[in-house]
Picture 1 (cartoon, one colour):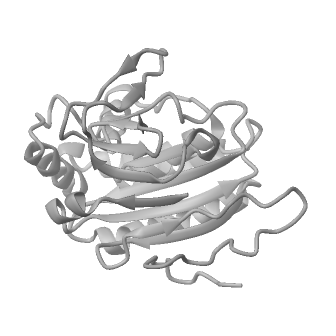
Picture 2 (cartoon, rainbow, N blue to C red):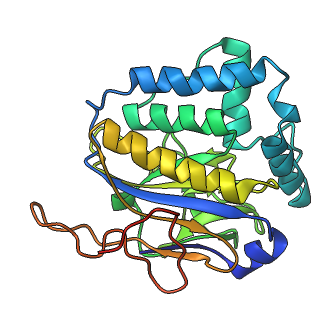
Length: 259
């Protein structure tokens, strides 16, 4: 499976930087509470200086949403929605240990982070403008169709794994009790997105290893290196020789080791 942003999305948003991490060994027993609390506290400290709407990371997403015809105060990127909930309610929702950890990292960096079950993705996954015939499954099990031109995560089967780009993820590929392997995607549009997303990727890999999951191949994607080849899952008990190795045109985050 290849993950990438379409040329049209890249052309419309040349400052886009995406971080991707593959992780295995995902279970519902991962111990994340103390780590979730630490990252959430970082977000609370920043919110104490002013609301999330003033963060450069969030302002960049608001401009992007406005450029696609969306009202930024009606449709918020996932990071802004989580920060707003944290500011108003004082806590983040608890869903699944891995999702809880990624949500906490998302608010700490003010960058949207999506976690997708790789077993629920068919073929390549591309962030592109929707045709309008893609199928999006809600968390309640209903089916929607993205508006033509709407930015979505679409796979080879025509399934939409997000609505309005980073606004809402699909219930189809959401992490569930049976999930064992995921693709984590973080996207930034602000001025320092390159450095911030690279740090976020390193943070994800460190935290995944610390909780007993297995971080694998990873990359930071830009216009110059827009694609990421997700390695095939290795048979049980046998390491994947391609784990951590970049595909054609793929960037690898600083410090990555190739085998």
